[in-house]
Image 1 (cartoon, rainbow, N blue to C red):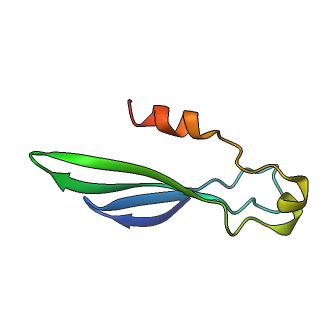
Image 2: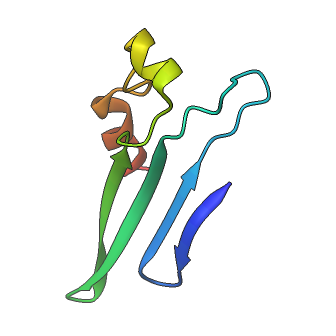
Length: 74
């Protein structure tokens, strides 16, 4: 589910898996910044609002930082 969208600036989303109850509550996104004929893309994630059920399981983050960095090369 898209949580934020500003054309040419930012897109953010959360994942609502049908089997994960309650929903985890994490958000991923990309920020876009014009730069010298191109674009700087910043990948970010926010785990500050994950549900207490998941906090107790100490699962964060599900996707390692290395995997997030790899998405920038796609």
